[in-house]
Image (cartoon, rainbow, N blue to C red; front, side, top):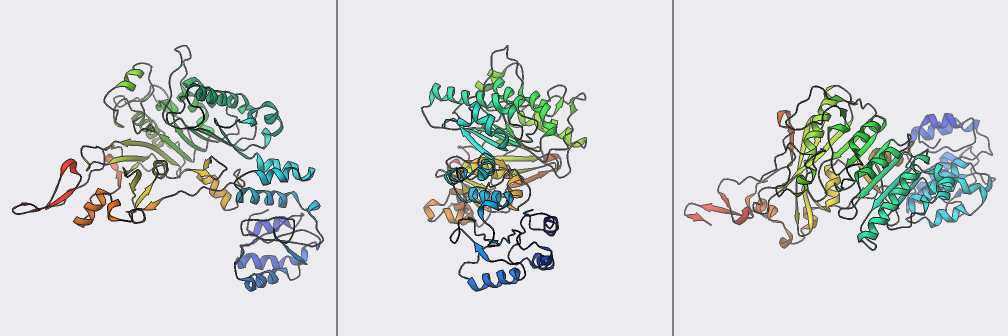
Length: 547
């Protein structure tokens, strides 16, 4: 009904409703004119268009060209009438209509626009109390997308709230973050939040998306807690983000929980998935022995994942260490080893997961356009600044790995992209760039919600989406030129490239037999130049020595 296309106009002819067009859409304007004789003069309809600031004449001309024959008597905006429309949009309404008998669809659209343009829920709460007619539409917008944290009282998870309003919930973001009292009390609060969520999840029979993220060093969920959460997901939930920052610990031996098995049971129905657990292995993607670097199993049976559109398996701990694969023995030994595990080590989760997904892809069990990414990383060196910390994004369908060089300098993270740009931003944004922006942050009051990128883009285009009223939180980045406002802020790698006139390293795309290589990116040393202490600065070499 509200999509800006010709079919929506034809579908609307037989019912009371609304029609819309965008400024300058000539084909839509033409179609509106051809159907004007079929309209009920008392029927409400609207034309949506962006306001042209300081261009009243152009606006009036466009309005007049459409209003001829439609008996449009007034323009209703938030400054001239009680009916509110925001975000630079205007609504046309027959003057005989009142707020008490506008269609529910128009009311929902108004409430959705209100949610988009406000940070708090105060305006929606006011709409909730206007009248009985407004109550239920407002509830559907107010509870459509929820954010729960360990810092608030998470009152929604009280029984009365879930029973009365649970049917309106389409997405839930649960964030366990720093703050509050900390220590054992904070852990107890986080456990309480997850226990309540697990209790009520099965009753949220229209839930489409769940996102659970845990900040590093804040809270360590147990294996059985993760397992119970996954098992509690209702069948309607098709989008899942589960990110513990790579932190977690085992329960007692009697618990015997293996979350990868539970992931495998629900994965075939899911569409968008992002996952990072304390330990991961090939069991998420098939049955048989757990695949390792030294084991090429012929009895491993991969899943069929034709519903899966996007998948991110992040095998890097928030601290930068690599996550180990699941195993019954030597788990604690791996955690206290003085030698950090590398992605291509036999005990790494990355090697086990990529081997499993390679078999899923080779069997043709994935959609051709699916984005199946496995994330890993190799550390840099403080003793050799020519070696860059390298983040790896392995595309299991295209069988190629994108390698991104990253480094922290003056408390900001620098990343070089494949289009040769250098960006300066936060570590969280660097991770999002490496993951391909497949999950994004949504504007909110204090803490943002999380949704799949395709769902947000569908909402932005006006297509059908459960993210009604949600707007993406823009990512804050700077180019290196914007950040380095003085020569003193220029990092050493940029100074070296400036004096040599040579780009010393690039982001890489690894293909063929090299596509599963986990080697770090290393700067070149141009002819006629040598490196000083710790390979930080380049110095020119002359015939009689170093200049």
